[in-house]
Length: 286
Image (cartoon, rainbow, N blue to C red; front, side, top):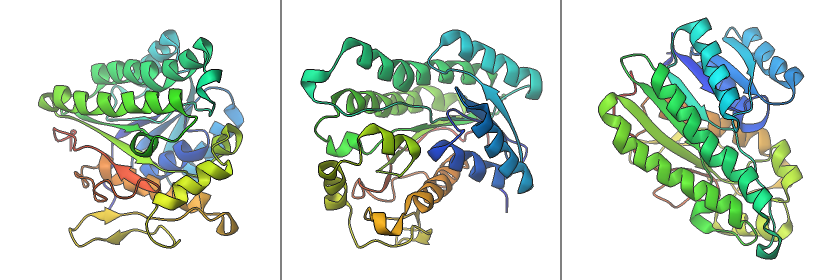
């Protein structure tokens, strides 16, 4: 059964990588998806075409969600085309590794302006255009907030802020029937990860050392407590798990959006894979 029929969903930064997988999955569950992109219209159009070819509904809107004016224009376009919004996935983000000595003011603001301020401003705009029954917000954070890897001071700090914001807004917006959650993935092999330095041997070995169990396909399975769990997988480049991790993450997120996963099924023990960090309050309009 499609759980998101007649819902309107915005996924920021969804022209590729994790965001594209999330957009496809939400569309597969019946939502009309706005594929947001900053640079490559061709990549965004490709995601839209894939969704439409699979029988879904989607269109692309260009906006830099680290820019307040672009955010305003983005949500104005959404209201013009759809009248309201039901789901916001704050996926857009930037990251880079570097030693403390190399941290610059410019790099700090580059990451915080998008990962934190842009997330807050998109959330403000979404709350204003959610339908009266409420809505669902999912923030894509990171498992770096659990294992705090070396040489990631700015990025880890920005995602720590996302976790705190998520919990705060879950309390604040719950009475308005707006559910707020975050999903904290581990190392998912995307284009950005390859370019960022996160695949350096020491970082990869750290991920592998804290990820329980042998590598296996991250297909959904039922745990003893009745939650859907998607993959506690070791990183194994020989098996190229990137696409499967993205699929698993997108399926997990679809359950969160639909209100069918309300607690952390991993209990903090799968930092190297995926982690659902907080219970949102409110019914999210469902």
